[in-house]
Structures are given as C-alpha cells and as structure tokens.
Image (cartoon, rainbow, N blue to C red; front, side, top):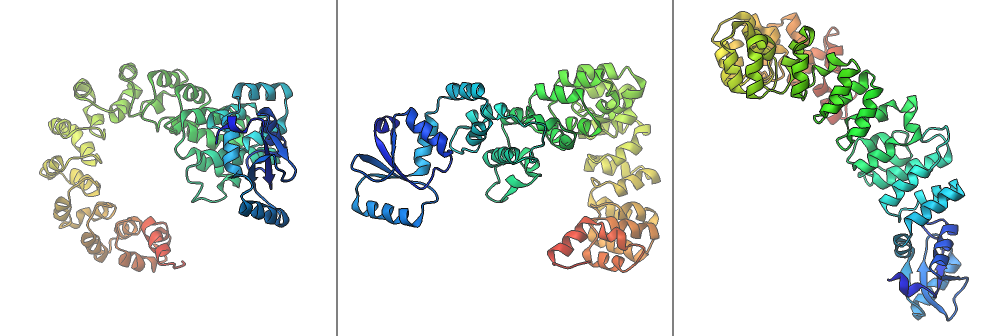
Length: 436
C-alpha cells in the first residue's frame, strides 16, 4: 500500500485507531487529503478494520467483506503507513509552539512512530516535579519507554507498569542514544532514582559525556559502578583523580599507564596500584624491583610472571593466595614445605585437586580446606568426620559441601543459621519445593 494511492480518496474505519489518538489520526488523514466516511458509500476505496469494533458494526464489516465491495486492510498497516510519512521536523516544531502536553503524550504512546522520533518527542515531554510513575501522564510515558525498548517484554509481562520497570530496562541491552535520552529526563535527577544513575554508570552503552557528568557527583556506590567498567578513558580517570578519589582509583584494574606512573610516586598508593593494575611484561618488570610483594596478589599475573616472583621469598605467601595461581606454580610453592604457604594453598580455589589431596592427609590444614569451594566432596566428607568446630562452620558456609552433610549440619542449632545462608543449600531447598 502506497500513501500516494490513498491521497484524495475516501476510507471507512470500523472501530478505533490503535496507535494514534483519534484526533491525531484524523489530522494525519487530513494532511494526506484522505477523507473518513461515516458509513459505507460507493466512493469508499478502502475499508479499515480497527480495534474495539462493536458487534453491530462487526456484522456490517463482515457483510462488506463477503460482498467484496472494497479492499480491506488492518488498522496496524494503515497506522504504520501514516507514521512512516510523518515529517518529524514539522511535528516537533508544531508541538514546541503549541506546548500541547496531551499531544506529546499521545505520540509517545504511538507504537508506530520511529525510535528516533520517539526519543526526540521524549525530550519535549514536561515531567513536572513528579517522579516517573507519580502521575497518570508520567506513568503512561514511562510505560511507553519500557514497552518500546525493553527486549524481554514478551516474557516479563506488565513490567512497564512496575516502578522497577526502568531498572529492568536499564539492566538490559540498549543503544547509546536511548541511554542518552533517558539520562536527560528530569526525574532521573531525583534522590529516589539514584539506583538508576548507578546502573547507567556501569552500562556498556553509556558514552563518555555522561560518565564524566556522573563522576562529578560520585557517591560511594557511583564510584563502584564507574570502576566496574573496563573502558574508563584517561579523561574520566583523570577527573576522578582530580576530585580526590585516588584511593579508589588505585584499585582500578584498567588504570591508564600514564596515570599509574603518577600514582606510583605516592607511597600510600603505589602498593595498591601494583596489586590491581592489569600487567604487561614491561610494566611487570618496572614494578618488580620495588613492589614484588604487592605484585604477588595481582590476578593479571601470567604464569611466567609468577615464576619470576618465586625468586623473591617475601612474595611467596601472597602468591600462594592469588586466585589466578597457575597449577605449576602451586606445585612449586608446595615443595617449600612452609606451613603458612601450604595453608594458603589449601584455601585457594586455584590449587589443583591432587595437591589438595596431599594437604588433606594432615589435619593441620582442615580449617583452610573446609573453606575452599574447590575442595573435592570426598575430602569435605572427611573433614566433617574430624569434627573440628571451626571446620564445621566453614563446611556449613561452603557451597561445595555435599547436601547430605549440610542436612546434618542443619540439625545443629549452632550451625543452622550458617546452613540457611548457604546459597547451594537454599537452591536445593527451592528445587525440592521444601520449606524451612
């Protein structure tokens, strides 16, 4: 169907428009010189089936369809055609000049308009001093945003009407233009919507302009969200540095190398930078001379870097605790026969199971083994039979502890609370549809 074929013609609508308000629907028809008939007549060239057709009109519609008096089309197809030919500049100028809030709301509820026009209209909407869901119009507009851009709307029914709907939306996949439009909305500045700003701070589509703005008003949670990103630019990092968030920034794994060099000159920050920054061979060699102890806990250490650190006895304890410890280096550390090093290996999830088997032969390390979620089930069962009080608490908390043992620990009033808080036990209870 072509809009040019409809210009100068008369159409008949049964029921109502779906996406357009009736006034806007009539205005669009008039703009294209299309006349809307009140009843069927010979000059009607198109019959449109709308929504909410009354039973009497449905009977007339059915008769006309049987008689093949004129072509039929659904209201969705016609509305998409009309929406496709809306002149965005003319419409936006008209709405700005008229300052007609109801018309803006009507267009924002129109599912047929393009996303680009929707976002332009969204910037025109006056939210007043109220929150996203605090008034009828604000609720309708908020629902329209969610309905249009939330990817899981089909499986998460009615989320558009929930106050948490925007949280679901922002937690999903969105383009930078949508993030930008939402960030510009007045209610987002309200104290009650701090959580939305935090989500935007961590969203992968949030552009640098917004990140720099968020950095300016960073609270503790905002800092955590910003520093959870892997793509903070030097400009954003420098802003956080200038604002005094140097301690937090020193723990950022993706710290810019030039800024890192500045921070390494500050004694209070150097150790933190060495422990957290993502290493390459050159940076590792630069830091190794003075910061080997702190480097040992850095999770970006390659096996080759770990092997270099074996030469520094002061770094071995921290290296044994490193969750990125390679199996070969773990075996080298085990050969030291140092009790503290072996204790750290026993609690490290990266330690290979054959080493844990060796460590388990000596009950000296029961407490460490019982806290390790990588300890094999049969060893955890052995630790349970040894009945060390601290080990039993660790077993109650350990998500790797066999369910049968957790049931036994649950019978102990001193351990029941720990077992109830164990995620694997809670998951098992839910899967069996059991209550506490």
